Each structure stands twice: as structure tokens, then as C-alpha cells.
Image 1 (cartoon, rainbow, N blue to C red):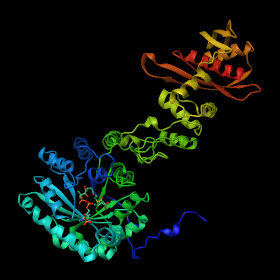
Image 2 (image 1 turned 135 degrees about the vertical axis):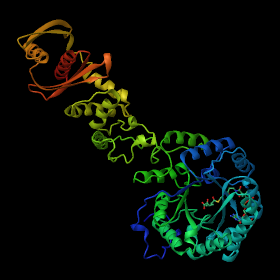
Image 3 (image 1 turned 60 degrees about the vertical axis):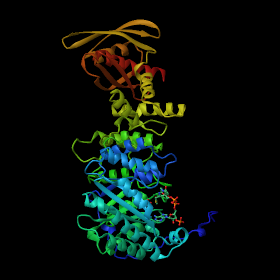
Image 4 (image 1 turned 180 degrees about the vertical axis):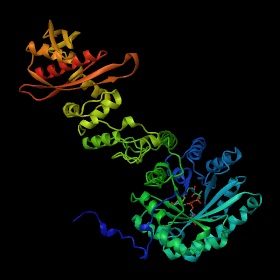
Length: 554
Ligand SMILES: CC(=O)SCCNC(=O)CCNC(=O)[C@H](O)C(C)(C)COP(=O)(O)OP(=O)(O)OC[C@H]1O[C@@H](n2cnc3c(N)ncnc32)[C@H](O)[C@@H]1OP(=O)(O)O
Ligand SMILES: CC(C)C(=O)C(=O)O
């Protein structure tokens, strides 16, 4: 029996919605996004952002494409007030962007908020009060009618106080949040939202935003979806209402809850970049938006330079993006394990420009979000030959023949086991050089010359064998064949010649050739050698010598 006292907790009651529709729906458009980084995210920071940091963050949110940005709680502190004023007074808010401010349903705070927003063209005035039974009981000591009155009085006051702004041509939108909505009885959540809407009197041109927060996430995402669908079906002025989601992540399913809430009928999503926010955080908008993109839906937010966004976020919030955070984490485009590396390399090689993305294990093209291909495969003791070949090819231009992957992969595995750490690309190159290119014992090629007569090639190879200089001669139908004859006749090693490939390394006058040669020593297993030279012939001769050296010494 578990020592964990499960009986201390209650299961979350299901919602009575047997004909729920959301499970069979598909998301085909982006929601309206609202960033709450500068308010909900900021209020969760040990060191809230300074005005200068908030300004930089705001500008970044605008660049990303947010059209609704909650800029703070201006009645809460001077710094919040000043920030709001600077945005307005310094004309920093683009015409197509609405700033949103949060305010409790309290008269003094509403009046102070009106001072903060004066002069702004487009404002979402966000009022909230908490509605769940526990909040009513513990925090407010008030019954349902009293809680409803707090909300309706506040909306009436806000309407009256902002009337002069509206008359002056400014647009004021009401957002109302029954805070702790998901812990509130559905009938009461509906009642208070209807009452607020009655006071506000939305129009087709100025809809009311009803934000239905999962202030604390207590239930599974399907229950959240049921709650949202229930509300969407019961609101009498659904056509004049923008239903908004605001999930937190206490159970680690805030993203799933939002995605299902959208299927359930919501129009709008509040969240933060990388999920910063109270406790386990707000909804991570980066993830939801890029999840949409990977389904072929334009998210209408631009995360094409996610590295820069992450840099500004980390610097201004003093928070970290964990290495496995979706899309942005350091390790999410990296594979260490062999079979993954193998599949990534094979599927990447088959990718055709302009065709749908189909690379295994990588659901989004890293280039689409400004991330680097080169970090995709990293090597440790879990890695396989495919990953090693990928590094040699992508970092250094060596396209090893397939059968050579099987030979060199284990060499790198042994090295990784011995070192016990991740291997860098340079470590792998060094191992490749030591295993193949730099082998000079017992045979070192010093020079190689050929002449040709009647299609017969005669070679002279100046070698150093076990420290002693020798010149071997041989004949064949080509330089390699002539050299193989020469070394066979010198009885250095008995072997069959199996395979030969070569390609150029680099471009232009300084290009070199690399040659890979596979031999089969009599009484031994097939093995490769490799050689590099500006002359393709000498590269091949070096490759034969490299293979022989491996056979003679291993
Ligand atoms: C889920 C969320 O994220 S909600 C947003 C939370 N964010 C913040 O609170 C950050 C900014 N807030 C603050 O700086 C402060 O709370 C202030 C300045 C707004 C108000 O400060 P204070 O009045 O000193 O304190 P506090 O917020 O604790 O007020 C609590 C009182 O307000 C009442 N209250 C709390 N929320 C609300 C609300 N939304 N509407 C009306 N009254 C409310 C409480 O019942 C309590 O009343 P009581 O004094 O009669 O018991
Ligand atoms: C004010 C509301 C929307 C809130 O932040 C929450 O419920 O988490």
C-alpha cells in the first residue's frame, strides 16, 4: 500500500454533457492570442521586470504579432502605472494592437486604472473576481448574490468611468473573468457571466470577452473541454461574446486543456511565452502556436527567430527555458540514441524541398523557427553509426560508404564509453583521422608516380615500410590496380580488392579528394581504408595503404 495519503484528496466531478461535440472537432484556424507575460507572467517573478525590461518585452511581443497584450495591473503599483503611461505617452502602441489591463472589482482600483489608460486608442479593461465555492467561503465570506454584485457593480462603474474615453473616440472592450471558473459550479459561472453581459451590453462591433480561467488546474483536460463547451452552449449572447481561455499548468496539462478548450468552442487564448506564470506556469503560447503550425494551420504569430525571443525572455525575466521545453529547449533538436539518429539521417536525406515535412523524430523543420540543423545529432555512448556518419558528413564533408558506417560506428562507441561523456564533432573527426587518415605504420606512402603505355599503367611507389624506405613497382589497368599488384608482389599482405569510392572535399583550387577503399585480407574480415590528397590517385593509394595498415596492426 502506498504511503501517499490519497484519501486526503477528492476526485474532480465530471460535467454532465453526454452529447459533447468537441472530441470529433478539428482546429483549422488560429485563435485570437493575448499575451499575459507582462501581467500574469510578471507577477510570478521573484524579481518583476523593470519598466525598461517591460518596454523591451512589449516591443518583442508586437514583433511576434500579438494584437492583444495584457500590459499589467496599473492600479497595483507605481511601476505598473508608469509602464502603462509610458506606452501611451510615448506612442509605443501600434494602432492595430490593444493593450489590456487587469483590475480587481474595486472602485478605487477601477478609477486609478482609468487614469492609467487615458489616451490609449484600444484598451481591453479586464475585471475579475473569484467565484468558486472555496473562494466565496474563505476569501470573500460572501454568498452567490454578493459575489455577483461585486462583479456587476464593478462593470457598471467601469462603464461609467470610461464613458468619456469612449465619447472621445477610444475603444474600450470589457473582459470579465470569473476567476477560479473551473472550480465554480457551472450554473453559477453562467449566471455571473450573463449578469455582467447584461450590464455591459455588448454589440456586434464591441463584443464582450468572457475569460474562463483554469486559475488552478485541478482536472483532466477533457473536463476542461466539457466546461468550455457547456458554457459556449448556454451563453445566451454567444454571438456577442468572445470566449477566452486562460489555463494554468498545475497538473502539467495546461497546453492540452487549451487545445481541447479550443475544440470545445473557445475563440481566444491567454498565455505567456514559454509558460512563465504562477506556480507551474501559465499556458505556453509558443507551444500551442507551433503545435498548430505543425498541423498545417498558420498560427499568425511569428516564431521564426525563436532563439532571439528566448534570449530576450531569459534576460528580462531571469527565468530559464529548460533543455527539453518544446520547440525552444536546447536538446529538442538533438538525438543521442543510435536508432533515432539513423532514422533522422535516412529520412532527412530523402526530404524533397517544397514537399510536406516528413523527417522522423523531428516534428518541425528547425529552420522554420531559426534553429540550427547542425545541433541535431550529438554523440555519446548511446549513439549509433548513422549519427556518427551524419556528423562527419554535415560538419566535415566526408560521405562515408554505407558499409563503412558499420565499421567506424563501433570505434566511436568505444571512445564514448572510455570517455564517459558526450563527444564533440571535433572528437569524432580526430577519431576518424586516427583510425584511417593518419595511419602510417607499418606502411607510409611518400610518393607515387605512374606512366601509361598501351593501356597498361606502370607505377612506382616510394614507401617507408617499418622505418625503411623502399620503392615498389607494379603494373595494372589503372593506378590503383598497379599499386595493388606492387604491394602484393612485395608480399606485404595477401588481400582481395573489394570496393572503391571517392569524392571531392571542399571546392575550388584548394579542393582535395578523399578516397575510401575496402579490402578483404586472406584469413581476415573486410575492412576499409581512407586517404586524402589533392591528387585523386594519391588519395586512393593512401587509402589502400590505410586499409593494409589497419589489417596488419589490428
Ligand atoms: C489569479 C490572478 O492572477 S489574479 C491577479 C493577481 N495579481 C495580483 O494580485 C498582483 C497585483 N495585486 C496587488 O498588488 C494588490 O493585491 C492590490 C494592490 C491590487 C490590492 O492590494 P490590497 O488591497 O492591499 O490587498 P489584497 O489584494 O490582499 O486585497 C484583498 C482584499 O481584496 C478583495 N479582493 C481580492 N480580489 C478581489 C477582486 N478581484 N475583486 C474585488 N475584491 C477583491 C479580498 O476579498 C480582500 O478583501 P478584504 O480586505 O475585505 O478581506
Ligand atoms: C485574473 C485571472 C484571469 C487569472 O489570472 C487567473 O485566473 O489565473
